[in-house]
Image: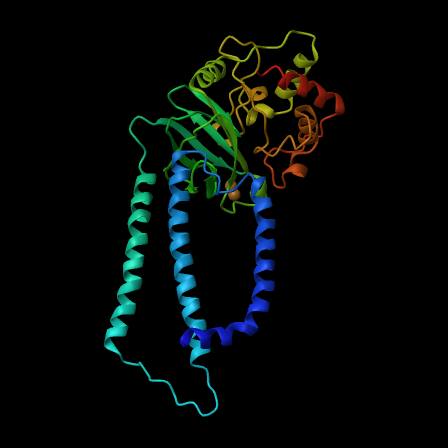
Length: 359
Ligand code: CUA
């Protein structure tokens, strides 16, 4: 009886309902296509911590879907069944019904409890690093991320190398303003706070390259402050670390690279950038002042991206990326602390030849 009445009532809505659902489905298809090549999606977890967050998200999402359908369906049903019609008496009023009031207070409270248990558990488990996790230090700068490996004595920037299947515990801080470290395939976000230490767990299942981004507005070039994490097998990681621990090798005299090193020493680059040739190197001091810290360049050429992981651009060679950067850093990254040094074409080419020796 009621069902027949409902059917009669919803018939006119069916046509428009079909049109609406088709529209929603096509829009959903568009967004799915986008997600496939979005480097910053949280929907493709690639490690246990990101998976944990993803699992909690979907649990809550499906609970919300059921609630949405039940509540909206109930509203529609009530609107249709009890709508005002000629000659109809007012329906029975339920205001002040204690049983109903208690029921619809208890049900949401139970739902919230069901959601809160895995959420709170997850928050605590994802905050604490394991004792045997590999420590790295992440320091935020305007506008790039610096990485240090205290146990390995390595300092680098822009690209964080990690071994697969091993928990990495990042001890993070900032050299200037608030930043936020976010590599969505591997973990959620966490702040980098000047004068404080925050920790972040990272772990990857497979050798791959992951994109990240600073997730807190931190000045003019916040949108150009990216991060890259490269995960590799333990053997590859050990080889990488051994190479990073080597001193740089000075270029042969009378080569473009030697000319490039001279430009580096004479243009004031050493105020900010360190290149570790070791104590026996006969040249100016190439260990930068801690205050004006730019990326350590000792193994610059081993990094596939630079300048806050924004260069080289897609389809651009490493050398072309450097040409663009060295010609005018603040032009590439507004507000950059690396100044435009008015380098000549020849100086830039020599610098590129020299940077290429820093393997
Ligand atoms: Cu650093 Cu935004």
